[in-house]
Length: 443
Image (cartoon, rainbow, N blue to C red; front, side, top):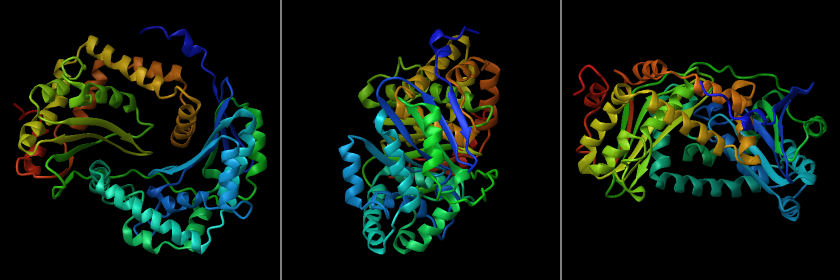
């Protein structure tokens, strides 16, 4: 095992404090003049049902419509005059309100976020105006092939779970969500025990703790926390009519959660699968056999591999954009790739993949915003943050046998999710694709 690079040992620690109220504060103290500060909430579409689906996203949209202390214009002017950036977003399991500013203004920005979370006005007129905005956003999403297919992939894979719901919600829900629904969601989900105040960059932990202790007296004290139950993965398929000349196909496989022992092994496998598009030219020197085969045989215009993790499950997916006539050969190469990875794997290939995973990780925490994102996600998912040194040690500990075990367990003789759009005459039937995953019958 290689020794840890000296710079990893100098990485500032992540400090974590739980206030008497139940709110957690997590920080990484850095240098410079820029701070990132915000609130990460254990709330998203995965905590909804078919009747209120879309509420979390709708509420996030209402964030900047004004509070009982600040009008919309006052809120926008205050943030703009400080030269700061204030943003919010919703995912399936998390909702985030975050700001980036010069360090002297960090308390003021956190006070604005606290005001939004505790005192949003949610007037009927604002709800109605934002409803139109969200409906237009829904139209844009449904015109985007990749976003549409990934929503369908979740719907197919998680048929009995709220993870299968879309983040925006269905049109009927968006049209029917009321102010009372938003208030109920705030009381149930925007709670002290499900909130983490996160700060990174030019911040001091003790100061952020004092801010958090002072600024959130009215956050809901509801102590109910939904259990994180195991989620069943369903192998299935959805075929959609074409929207253009190219076919869009997602091949999805059951993956692992953030906390799973195979989390880093999946990152290694994702690296072996790689990514490619025509603008990159030849895939010969990308370290991926699949990229080389796809590029040399012109099987697709592009493909992208993603390992998406959630609290208790995950999906590894390969999203391809390809000429319809190539779908049979493309599917064959994708399905046999996992067996070939295992057959060709040696110490040199594993070392190369480990280095790529490490580099990717370091590039993904190369700013205070990226660091805050990493802290918030990890503390919500794991109740702590793995240090860069610990991550490197875990990656280094992966052996060829670990990769082979993971490949066999998750990709050999399994039921994948297939979501496809386009002229699909050359896409094999689901039963055939299912059989292609059986290594004993592969040619």
